[in-house]
Amino acid sequence: MALPAALAFLTPAAFAEEGMWPYDQIPRDELQQKFKFEATPDFFDHLRLSSVRVGGGSGAFVSPQGLILTSRQAVAGCLASLPGGASEAGFYAAEAPSEARCSGLDAEILLRIENVTAKVAAGSKETGARAVAARIQNISRIEKSCAPGHRCVVVKLFSGGRYDLYEYRVYNDLRLVFAPEYDLAFFGKERDSITYLRYGLNVAFLRAWENGKPAATPQFLKVNPAAVHEGDLVIAAANPQPTGRASTAAQLQFDRDRALPLAVSRLESRITKLSVFSSQSDSNKRAAEATLAAFLAQYKIDAGRLIGLRDDRLVTRKTVFEDKIRRAVQASKLGNDAGKVWDDLAAAYKQWTPFERPYQILEASPAPGSNLFRQARREIRKENADASGAAVPEPVEIILLTAYLEELKSLGDKEVPLKNVLGGKSPQEAAESLVKTGTVKQLAEALEDSARRLAKKHDEILGALETSASEKIAQYRFKLFGNADYPDATGTPRVEFGAVKGYTDRAGIAMPFVSTFSGLYFREENSGPYLVPQRWLDLRAALQQTTGLDFVSTCDVGGGDFGAPTVNRAGELAGVLFDGNLESLPGTYLYSDEQARAVHVAASGIAESLRVIYKASALLRELGLPVD
Image (tube, rainbow, N blue to C red; front, side, top):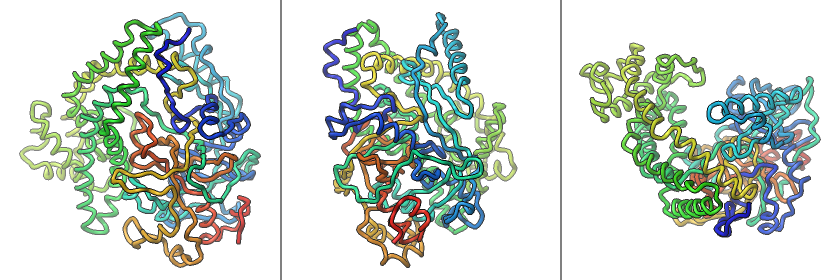
């Protein structure tokens, strides 16, 4: 089918920085045009076979003896299980026998990708639910045909426009080799996590073992400790969490005007209450720390997305591109009524808007942070017990449930029958009674009918339509662009390209492309989030303080990318991607390189830290780096 003239104005990925690209869909022409980089198959095969998924994030082999470089958060669970305060103080095993086994942690290498779209659709002429059942059976059969000891997953791309089989080799005996102190890895903690400049040594080393000895890994990345320079091409091998770039302008406007402002407001009130409580004593601080950290992390995500969506340029870009897609779809005879998809979705969001607040409070996000309420609801709904949520200290539970009861009162008696729960008490008095008497289930039961009614209404107005519309739009784009357009991220291995590049932040302040050790000490206050460990203070004079510690790039970053190896054009490891700045968070919907940046630990900073601060001679030698 010849593409219509309207497509001449469509550029789904204007340049190589945009996109989270599957390994079988590398934008070779764009890389050559933009960076004068020849994207050879050998280069990307080596990158793929050296990279791993680990600990919910990413990593890479960096020696032929199974040594893996990743981020510190990827090994947080392993550190927490070790005795002697390793989760705070860090860990180093100079010899293989001292390496600490990380139970439940594994690493996967993507061995191959196969397009299995025809196999998924094979043998079925059914429609509707029967067609879905047939696809599920075919997918199960394909995945079970995997080679012994490997793991196979059929990945749905372009909302079913394409299905790829991903075959992984799994290493399930991982042992911890090195992790820095918590205070240094997360220097600035939540306060700096929403910004840049950053000064974190957010890395860790693991080792894969097989048959009782370090695994042989001939495919690995050589670490290059040379300084990065502004304008350098960098390539990250990551596993970004699902994105929503097929979202329509109507969806973005709804998130901007209704859903996200409400979510941010709810988080702000709880963060304020917990911050006041935390400031009153050290015991309060310890009790509130985990819950407050979780709220701040979510606040960063939601507030960042909202800030981006309130930039009219983002929604305007989305609207303009969407209009071009609609015209191209209609002109290409993909469907004369294709425009209805966007119109129906816009009408549905308009209809749903007045229900969003009670829906969030009662059903989508009830009693944020309260483990007691979460478990009570699961029990009422006869859902399997969930051991993932840690117990929340009683004083914190009371604060969280007080905030929730205040929200419920604001909905009014017609929406929420609270009289029996409150019994004439104030929200705080009622919360104290519920927690101390172990009767939080009473509150969950009182809300259940209202919550289920809203869930049913959500499904009727938005549920099926939202899913079908997203699928149709993604499939239209795939039919129009084919492999010239990248699919939304799915938590599977992707390649991200960018340039090392500073930027001007929202306050008009120029941010340099790299931060150095000297900046770390400039920020050091020896308290709160800016606590520099003592050995770093003692050895300050020995460090080359102009050495780069962190740098930023225009790589299209997503959640799940932490620990991603970042290589230069020679395929050598130049850094480890560990975060994005606040301006990168709207990238869930739409990419922009104006201010959005991926944040990396520089290989130069890793090498200097291992040499001067940690005296990790054995680790440096294994990496092929100078010891003195």
